[in-house]
Image 1 (cartoon, helix red, strand yellow):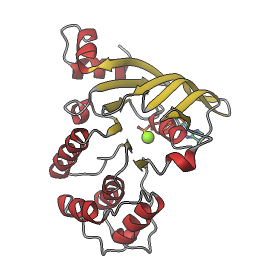
Image 2 (tube, helix red, strand yellow):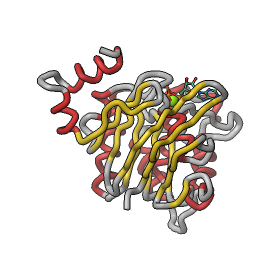
Image 3 (tube, rainbow, N blue to C red):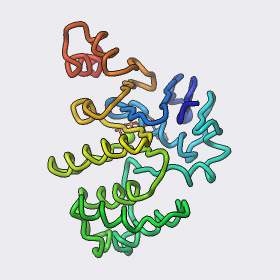
Length: 238
Ligand SMILES: Nc1ncnc2c1ncn2[C@@H]1O[C@H](COP(=O)(O)OP(=O)(O)OP(=O)(O)O)[C@@H](O)[C@H]1O
Ligand SMILES: [Mg+2]
């Protein structure tokens, strides 16, 4: 049973078709990179998965349960970083992290993981959220998600705003999650950011998946070009 199974997902906003028949499968213990240019439909897909948006048609399930009907229950088993991080300005980073962890209570204490990730990402949890820089606000959302001992992590551009050192910390953290057998859906604009992490890669463009497969499979499609070259040519529509 796949962890995430999306079949023929269509999402329309009025006249605009944001997702036009998306298929995507995330298997247990895998990291699946979800790549595509601005406006391709990554965040919309993730919002449907999280039960924030309702699909126009198609089926979307997590742990074999309908993502829309069972969102409350599913949220106890997953952790996520939203694409655009808006945090409560008047709370400190630490308070937001605690709040997110409490919402997702799994019975176990998160204290140890919380401390570990605060340290790894060099984040001061005592500042008010409105005072954080963009990158540090992103870290609050990251630490909140990573500190919860979830089965599934859904990360929408988790490294946007992070500097290269933190990017490396992030990469190591994802490899650790993989060792723990966790499943991860990871969206990004940049292939090179996720290439070393991803078991599978799906490329979305204008609401359609244009490539999907293991890294090796996609390399074959690349036919002598590097993956980066293939990726950029898909971006540019050549
Ligand atoms: N609430 C909404 N109402 C109307 N249109 C929307 C809404 N949300 C997204 N869209 C449109 O759906 C399309 C897909 O947007 P989405 O945010 O999913 O792209 P994305 O791949 O996450 O892009 P980015 O890389 O910039 O984050 C875009 O054309 C966007 O304008
Ligand atoms: Mg997005």
